[in-house]
Length: 415
Image (tube, rainbow, N blue to C red):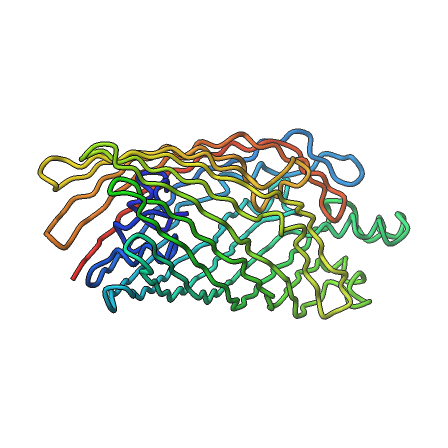
């Protein structure tokens, strides 16, 4: 959702009715019909998350406690930018372009942590290019649509317990003679890949009265078939497990469908200087049933069950404009559901939970046509439990402690 510092300040409660900055290209292209002249919006966000794992009797396939640390703080600070341009072509038609990152995940555990067989490094980023057009059909009703070109790149790493693999494929005496015992013969795999996918978005904007604006929008799902390379590191005593063409460097492919969503919102000017915004968003996360990676070698496919649920996000915000029209202050609250249904389907790569956003922000009119925006958000998260069994029979069991701080700054230039 971090596509506008204006919206960050009110917890994205005004996203489908926002006419204040260029993020309308992303949230609701129909609102571009309200722009006069040209508008450039450029923003950046600093994420300062914190997430740690607390073990609760994690075991390998034999029921022996998993060795290693708890993994440390698995997420560090990161920076996310976005850019929008809106151009009034005629008094009824407007063009827009958005460049942003609608999906991303980044975390890294210590390489020796207890859950190393289920994940160490996870990096997924989707870069989105979104040309759009809007048409003012009547003085009150507008329609807009856009085309999306999305470049996704990913990198996933984890350890491999060749000791447990040996015991599942050969007599225990043979494995013991080679030193191939659970947690005693770790290898490593790195999956890297990328893809270009395509999608669309459209929306409607309606001026119900001088005080009330309504908006709704839809963003389509985007299908990616990520092609890349799988690189394995195998300890010397486990080389015999590669003789049938498994655990060798090879090409890989992973199909991923990023979900579609529907966004509804209202903006209400309750007094000349006080405005209330609210919205709700449904996201089709149930599309994600599993994450499957196929290999061009004899390696069996890697299948990670997900079984995610559809989610709703609800937001409410309030905005106040000062008497000199130079400053606007805003605040908001959001409840954002997690798609992860239970501890068994929670992944160490994405230990997500329900999120509760509390935000505040401001706008300052630096010049008549130039404004700067700032915003801060603190995300309170539940303490999600994990009880997930990996492909080699290890069960990662415990809880996470999580929170996130976000700082956003933005510049708008109208000309």
